[in-house]
Image 1 (cartoon, rainbow, N blue to C red):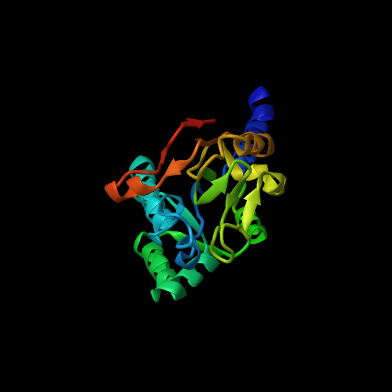
Image 2 (spheres, one colour):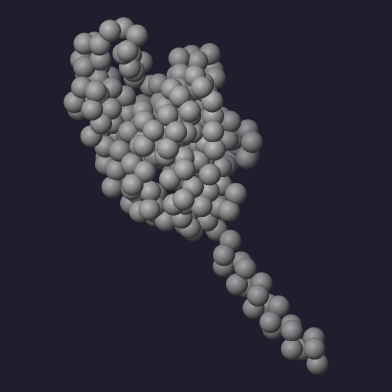
Length: 231
């Protein structure tokens, strides 16, 4: 009698559990855009940004290698790239940067998602399945309150596209796996934004208390912090 009673219940509970498991585990990498040299050349040398167009792209590919080593050669990576800055820098340098980014994605078998605004980024991110984001990484300019997808590209020393900590409640917290690992490789996001991220998403964001240094990518290393990483 009890077996007949609890058998269907066990099946029902198992079915409900399966429905809560995401169909895939994604590794999301967000890549901001470079500054234009026509603006940065006005600065003194030590304050200039992005002499190399692919600072954030190269750092992103280093992280991709790390993910594929840790999670398997076929780990699904969603690469979200801020397109307008690469288009304008391509025109400035006379290079096919957006084509090169697309070729990198194809060669590495990634899902490439171009976006062109803060709102567009949120919309694209929110389209991911519930519970599917296992890791999240941001490479780009930032300050203590925001990811800056664009900086010193359209306007010198100004950002025109960003994700501010006030925007974080617009991101669905249900996107993230329970133990998702999130990290910002931009400057200063461990000074305020990481706390707002945890309040809004329920998962921790590791960020820099201090500026980050991308010069080490030329040695095959991920950006380093002049300060400390905090969660």
